[in-house]
Length: 329
Image (cartoon, rainbow, N blue to C red; front, side):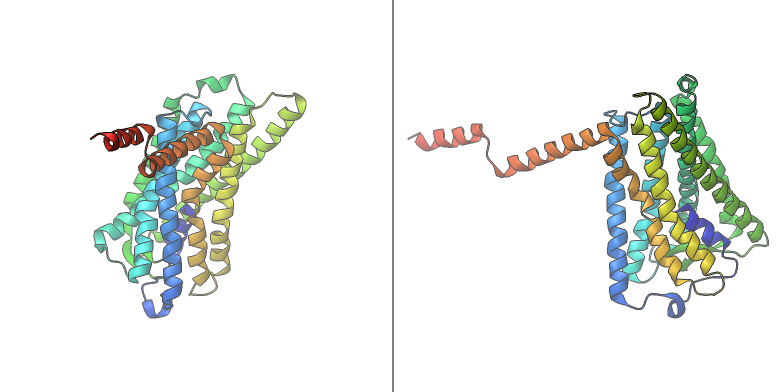
């Protein structure tokens, strides 16, 4: 999602507010994309809510405490992006226009910029923190929840300042390319701003990839050196998170680079919808890689199935009461 935001900000001379030229004229295509984005929204709301409940109330994600803090904030960020970006996009595809007004148009991009950038940096922090935990296991005891909260607060404050600057520098418009609200570069500082944002994104992504590769090599080295010397659950979780993040955002970056030669960049639209997968991937990753979270989900499913079953199958007590009433004169 952050890559899509940076790309929108960096498009210096492109404003996709012309429906005739950039809009989707095929209703079937719009409805299919709307169904897809609706699925992304519902999956994010359910999945990220379960992540927050499971990690905060039931301690279902048994990883290092600083990693759990980052995971919780990433879930909050994905929820915000789903509410302010994915859901309006789904509605706009059906309505074939923006129906939420100018204030929510600005708020949509503002919140996506803040929490999309924050989630991008949190993935970097997650990968780097796990590398340090594996590299220096005895020093890792000092990585407390307070450090995780402070790190996230600093990241969030930086992106909040960037978002405020963007609000004052740029004009909002509804883009028929993304079927969402984007910003048109109408300021003389647009080029510098785009370069700064792009640089932050590149640095964060580089830290993520380098930390993950170093973590993988270090984990393999430790595993080869001594049996049982490494807990692979946390390593597996981080690596899967990074792989999905890269796979979901690379198509957008590639389509952006390939389409800079032309004015209309229709492949960017579908690449951005692929990037939406970042908002739901963490739930499935933790289900696969974190045993405690998987057990938590199984217990919740059993409770739901049992509750539904009781609605249709009468309990032995109810059957006994009915039989007694039938036998009474």
